[in-house]
Length: 309
Image (cartoon, rainbow, N blue to C red; front, top):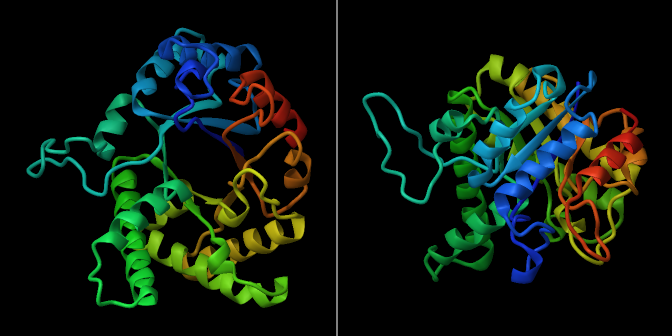
C-alpha cells in the first residue's frame, strides 16, 4: 500500500492576514478540502492511502465531514495530527496537566489514526530552544552535538507515546546542508549515512516488533533542498538515501520500512519519485508555488495521478 501524507501546516490562515488560505472561515476550509477529496475519488482508492496531517482545531470537523459520507467513499482517507507531546496521560499517572501541549491520548480521543513526528520544522524549533540553554562555556561544536542528541531523545519519547496510544507514526528524518557538507556526492555519502543512522537508531529505540512492522513509516526530508530557490535532489540521490534507510531498518530493527519522500511531492516530480523502487509514497504540503500559492484538492488529485496510482 502506497501512502500520500498531506501536511497542512498553518495553511488555514487567510490571505488577508498574510496566509495562503483561499477561504476565510477555517471550518469551511477544512470541510471544503474533505468534500473535494471525496468528489475526486481519493476516499475509495485501492492501492493508496491519503493521510491528512492537521492542526488540532481541524481534526474534529474533518472527521465529522468524512462521517457524513458512506464509508466506501472515505475508507482510504485518514486523519492525523502534526505531532504529540513527549509525555502522555495514563491511568494512575498524569491525568491531563499538559497546558499548551497535545498528549497522544488526546490526539487518539479526537479521532486521529496517524501522527507525524520529527518533521524538520519541529526538529529545528527544538534544536534552537535547547541550544539557548546549554552553558556558554561549551564550544559551538559541543553545543550542537549535545543539542542534537537531546532532540533525538525527545523525538523518541514522542514516538513511544504515539505508539502507546495505537497511533501510526510518520517519523521524519533528513540531513541539513551543514551535515551533508561540501565535496562530491561520493564524498558526502558517509556523512549522510551517519546522520540518517543516528536519527533512525535514536528515533526507533525501544519500539516493539509489532509496531515496527505495522505502525511506522519513515519520511525522508532533504532539508538542504527545501525552500524557495533550492535545487531538489535527483533520483540517484533519493534512491541512495531510501535504499540506505531500508538497509538500516532491516539490519538494526528487523523490518523493511516503508519510506516516503518528504522533500515535497508535487506534480513536477511525482513521476520521477514513483519510478524509484525504494520509495513508497510522498509528503505533500503546498500544491501551487506560483501565483495564488496554496493547497488545492484538485491539484492533489493531479499529483496522485502523476504518481501513477
